[in-house]
Amino acid sequence: MRKLAFLLPFILLAFSCKEKRYTPVSDPNGTKIEYAYLYKDILPVESMDAPERISFIQEKYPALARGIFQEIIGIGHPDSLPTQFYYAGFLADPYIKQTTKAIDSVFTDFTKYEKEYTEVFDRYKWYTPDAVVPSVVFSYNNFEYAIIALDTCMLVGLEMYLGKDFSGYTGLQWPDYIKERRIPELLIPETLTGWLMTEFPKKNEAVTFIEEVVYRGKILFYLSKLLPNYEAHQWFGYPKDRYEFALKNEGNIYGFFIEKKLFYSEDTKEIKKYTEEAPFATGMPRETPGRIAWFLGYRIVESYMKTHEDVTIDQLMKNHDYKSIFAQSKYKPKK
Image: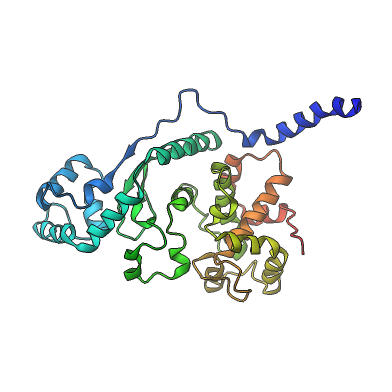
């Protein structure tokens, strides 16, 4: 017993040294994040007509105004007379009013979102000091994008997280596996995934399946360290039972890709089957989640980082030799 007591501090010290790279030290001054609520200015407000609201938005968001009307809502330049007409129709549209009401009902308090984003970007700044820490703009992105990533800000589309049963999604004809992810609990994981993919883009020359897999695995591994209090399935955006199925069948999933000789394939069509949206993974049991390459990539990168204890997340994100990461990962899933 005395021997165990003697060894324990050394065991803890060794463990703490290994995990130091995953223990962010907060900036004593705090990470300063600016928050804005663009959705309140875009969506219907009784006190202003269309021309007044357009002028108000141009004044308040001079850098964003053109993009809001031309790219997000898609009705033309804000200085154009027809845009005033189209925007008046937008404000009067029952569907838009329904969406506004739903946003106000679901997002009643932004305190927790601001707190969480601030904590996340505090970690982010520590892990990758050279990366841009964006301002967060709670926006309306016209049911197109969960996040619009600009140079120094991210526009978070609140209408994308109104709950899977929001009746307004019916008209969009989204399949159930997409609607399952339209929940407030996934707002932060999904928007951060989008921001990371923008800030750490894939090397253009990386065209094989394994390079796609490892790249996406790097994004998810970093996300897992930014969101340590989330459940693993939420990082992936998988239903919990689908994630657990993937874990139990990891060896079979890996074996499937070995058998198909897909790892070094440059067949874009085949690659997309396993990296992009799908109700399940083609050729595998229907319980296997779509975008299964993300799961495989995460497990490969996780293995790589376990066997390379001196590699920081900053170094990982700057390493674009995806094939080398795979080769050095010593990844061997249980069968």
